[in-house]
Amino acid sequence: MIITVITLILAAIGFIRGKLRADIVALIALLILTVTGIISTSEALSGFSNPIVIMMIGLFVVGGAIFNTGLAKMIGARLLKLSGKSELRMFLLVMGATALIGGFVSNTGTVALMLPIIVSMTAGKGESPSRFLMPLAFASSLGGMMTLIGTPPNLVIAEVWEEAGNAPLTFFSFFPAGAVCLIAGTLLLIPLSRIFLSGKGHGPNADSGYKSIAQLVTDYKLDSGLYELKIDEGSDIDGKTLSQLNIRAQYGIDVLEVRKGDIPGRIIKNISQHAAQPTTPLTAGETLFVRGDKADVETFAHDYSLTGTEAGKGSLQFYDIGIAEIVPIPQSGILKKTIGDIGFRSTYDVNVIGVRRKNTIISTSLADLVIQQGDILLVQGSWDAIGRLGKERKLWVVLGQPLEEAAKVTLDYKAPTAAIIMAAMVVSLIFDFVPAVITVLIAAILMILTGCFRNVEDAYKTINWESAVLIAAMMPMSFALEKTGVSELVAGSLVDSLGSFGPLMLLAGVFFTTSIMTLFISNTATAVLMSPIALESALAFGVSPLPFLFAVTYGASLCFASPFSTPPNALVMSAGQYTFVDYIKVGLPLQLILGILMVVILPLFFPF
Image 1 (cartoon, rainbow, N blue to C red):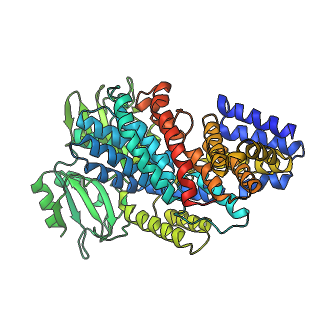
Image 2 (cartoon, rainbow, N blue to C red):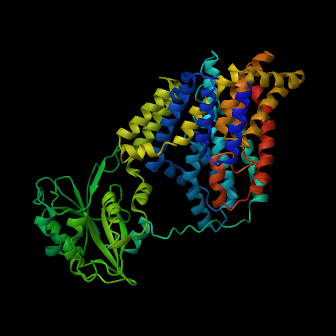
Image 3 (cartoon, rainbow, N blue to C red):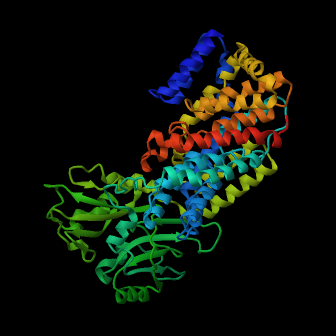
């Protein structure tokens, strides 16, 4: 018992100090308990095959696909547009939209999604984002309390309850109490945020030092003079390459993109696009995006029997191909050479589609343009090709981080696909068609197979391995707590000290013990440690463990008094220019009032 207690105390100190990552601290503690023989090797590794951990990994992939396709951003932005000029309506929509998304996606991902939306919304209204960002973080946690998959502590208590021989908790078992908590929390945050958060700074400068894709499109007027030319069956252009057609020399127009995709309006669309390469044969069904004078484009379309229309603003998309600016360095080998002589297309697989010379944008006759010092070249090509340009450090500097910029480009044409998969997953979880972990894994695989990620590597990048390993390493701790009698000792102490006051006081003891622990270590780790203790306490007192387990998950989730209790709290700290005291002023009274409320209402929904 002494080794177990010392190990857990040292682990708690490691979590609090933060010198090592939480997952490494948990692994060290796990290894100590294994080496000392307190738990067996199979028990130590059991967490890594636990359905909760596997389900969490699958949920990270599903959530990543929802972000990657822009589905969550569309939902959030559309809801926020309803706010109009009313600050109160905007506040309620921020809370509601965040809680809604947080019920199905990790609270960290929810805040990462909503934060830039809120900053841009408040900037447009001339208001400070600090009034909304801390409530945003809290709303993500409150929303996660309403569904089985909303937050890891919910999954933890569901597993403990089922392992104790009870019927599994359903997807919306958490909803009644969670909804009450969300409503109460929102009503409390309206005055708390107005009193303590209004009038703070307007957030950090969002200037990243380089231009976004949208800014580049605007600056270089890429949407101007842009036309879509559809290659129909039987067209004279079918099967020919761009080098054979020699379009720029004969017609004075540039081919920016070749795209192939299903007609707009279908629920599931597949779009493939590639930059104009001289040796790539053109085929019927493809669409050329060209830029040039209207008369020249019409002549080209007529000569090759193409169906042409003027492209609207926003027609250019950057799913598989992208754009970036490069700046030749002094004494670069490309200076004083024409763009045509350098062979960007043949050597680097990119096209130069614009040049910024001082305050002038040059977009015509580029092949004959001599590159001068101080010129900035806008290049277009696959994201990988643009990324490779960064290796040519003796020739130029690539502004920004092309591959990072590519990761920001949402595959919005896949949003309907992601929506259908997510809806099917939720329906299956609600009606329990197959085990929850299998449902989530199927949804994750479908997200990958249907192209909601560019590749499998992107899907793996969405997984928060630190959280997965942390939970997997902490779960076997329950074996140590039980085998050494620590759980029984703590549960007995709670029963002895609070049992004489009745089950409600014992429930309050479990709730606030969990709540206090969450101020110092992660809410997931706290839920893993406290769940078996709550179960033992209830059984020792002779009442149902269910309200006590819910006290654990809600006590772990209602952690607002510190910026370090949950990742969402920390995420908004710098953006909202908050201090530690701000969390005390707003979060502590919120945490105390909601804690008292939950102690009162939990027995109403889950009787002793």
